[in-house]
Image (tube, rainbow, N blue to C red):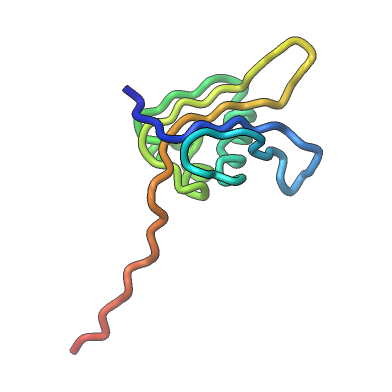
Amino acid sequence: MLGGKTAAIALAVEDRARPFVVRAYAGDPVGDRLAGSAAAVAALGRARRTPAVEADPQLLEAAKAAGLTGPVIAAPLHAQGSHGRVIVIGRLGERRSPRPTCACS
């Protein structure tokens, strides 16, 4: 089972700096954190299922930026006359702060 806790639907927008925006979600409040993952899947042009997104070379950077971990299913949504919709289902991991270094002697 996927065990996804978050689902988001992102829509393409006419903005080069931010080509996708999240318009609907269920689960963890994501804001636009998953927009980069949606853009990566849209660029692939096909559905993507991976057991560990943090080890997937095609989605790694976008997943890392979103804090997405574990299994992910994402797919472009095609409907007659509409383009630029992507659904992303997965889990948002905890954003970890870098561990402090010890200045011990």
